[in-house]
Amino acid sequence: MTGYLVFTGCMIILIILYLAHRRGISAHSIESMIFGGESVGTMGLTCSVFAAWMWTTSVFGSAETYALFGIWGPITYVLGACIAFAGLIGMIVFLRRHYAKAVTWLEFIQVRYGRWTKLCFYLFAVIVPAYVLIEQGVGIAFVLETFYGSSFRIISFLSVIITMGFVLLGGMKLVIAEEKLATAIIIAGFLVGAVSVIIGTDVTPVKLQAISLTNLGLAGRISISAIQYFVLAIIIAFGQIAFDPAYYIKASMAKNEKKMIWAYLLGGIIIWGYITLVASIYMGYAATAAGNEMTDLFRGPARAIFSFIIIIIGISTIAHFMIGMMGVFSTDLYSTVIRRGGSDREKIIFGRVMLIAVGLSCASMTIALENISLLTLDVFCAIFFAAPCVPLVFGCISQRNFGRLPIMATITGIIGGLIIWAVIPFSQQGSQLAGVTASLLISLLIMLIGCVRRMPYDR
Image (cartoon, rainbow, N blue to C red; front, side):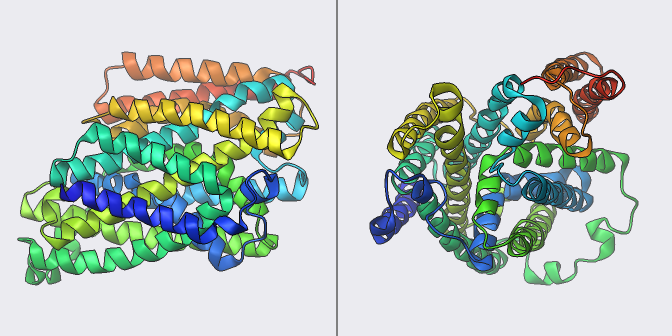
């Protein structure tokens, strides 16, 4: 029952936020629903980026790597993710300077490679956000099931459905408001939670004060496995965020480019990196030292606090990716496949219908992912997301016309990566790295061939 009460409390917060902001929301305006109706300052955008980038995987996945690689696990996880986010910032700045009319990467793909390539790459504008929001629903349900025995299926399903309703009603303005509140809750909650964990766990403050470079593992060399995971972390993270339309839409809401860069650096790298690294090292070390699972560290009030934080983290990320999909459906897909020049009302209705369809599908899929490791899910999906990253980056660094070659490169890369991953008898991590690397290199090889052989430009 406690788990359902904590979950209900978080849902009540969403309702209060909607009631407090509903008068400023124009339900059938693209400017209001998708772009928030006004520019966002550095602090607001920083909070938005941080809350959107802090996933349940940031907590569980990074701490899980401690058990695999010692302290080098969280370090490589965080460093790899920060490098990938820096790549996203570079991508956004490039689009703003050279393709000013392109709100998201999809318009850029059309300009560089043509309409058919853009239509094919719509798949990633939906699959990547859908995968991430499914992952968040699974993370929320995992915590409440582990701590309180709450139904995994009910919690995971409702996490996605209720957040979808929140986005459908309030749009970007409400999402930004929730992310500002979420940032304050996450930072404050981790501080309070850390104290509660120290009081309520067998890993006493005395032992924690005795942590040294030796028992953390920093005194030893970094392992080959940790280096392999570092490479994986960069590819996984970049594939997850580069195809997310919401980051591009939010960047267009900044008052100017300089403020946007500072907000993304602060929220996506500095604040996110610090909190994730400290939390993952502490929880990973404490769990290892106590001989318990990470979730066994939380007792009494600490369980309720941690559960509350995880729900807020998951909701923020789900809302972020959903508003990105709704933005693409309303502003781009409608004009591309339905008709040009429709009214804002028609576009918003279309975007809502599409989001409902995707949301219901994702909510149903979360039910089937019980007992699945979030870290394993991350690495498996990296094979799918690595291949299309190559044409995206190539569009920035090369001015050559590739026609429909990016479609071939992406499909071939994914198929090749899956075959390598399934067939080559490496260790689990070795097979995963081989699959991701093959997906990336096959796609890269085909694009390099296109640099030598001139391709017809596809309009």
